[in-house]
Length: 323
Image (cartoon, rainbow, N blue to C red; front, side, top):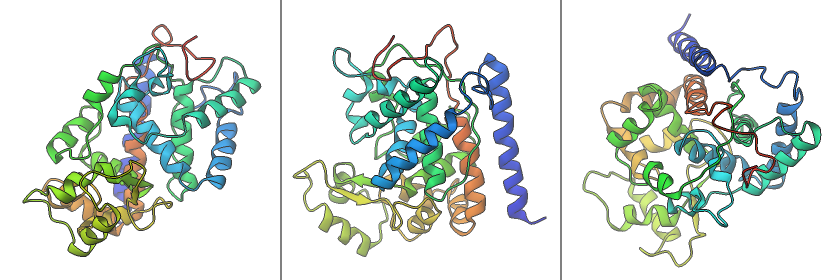
């Protein structure tokens, strides 16, 4: 058995152990959670996400980012979906700039309510939509446990405090994800989500026009970014640039790019040079199977963060408002 296969088996085993631990700890999460209450739940989410992806190639990246931002604040509880009208919700935070596809999640919820009313939580829909987005984009098929409950509260101050900034340091990044139970390998792998989608000029102009001495960027790449983001204060917040050269395909191109100094964000450059993470970046760049397995393990852990119990949460009838 090769080294890559051994690493993959270890990553898969770690993910399985995490699932077992989560399920035992609160008696809630399970692979077959909807077996009797909504047996077609996963198929319905898959069908709807595929429909969105066919009409909008950027949808998978948006769904994946939505889950990450939800799970970073209060845990994976769909708090990010609560309507900002009348409440100071997470979507009021500047850290959630560019978050999209909330209405599409509501559409999926409506389809599930028509099939099995009051059964499938919005938190599970967010996690499943992200899972399907990875697979539809060419990434790994990840088995995740279900049974999350929806929160009754959302707070933009929590989002301000807990969502990583575009200029986060390697130290702060590792502290953030290790605090959620990810190990070093998984923390580097979870950044591979940057292989999908685009970044806004708003989030990279500080790096372009106020560079740090230790931030090494490929000069040709930097010149191209300056053409796409020509001013320190973007004229519009809608201007975007691709995260890597294959922004709609889930692959290991992100790691190849950052080894060449073509990472979009400061953290991308940082992990390629930090002695704690640089070897993992190199391994992920040459071994997509190893990356996929490590990412899968990280995805399971992150999507199972701070799950609400039945007593503390609910299954919302509409994702944008509490019952």
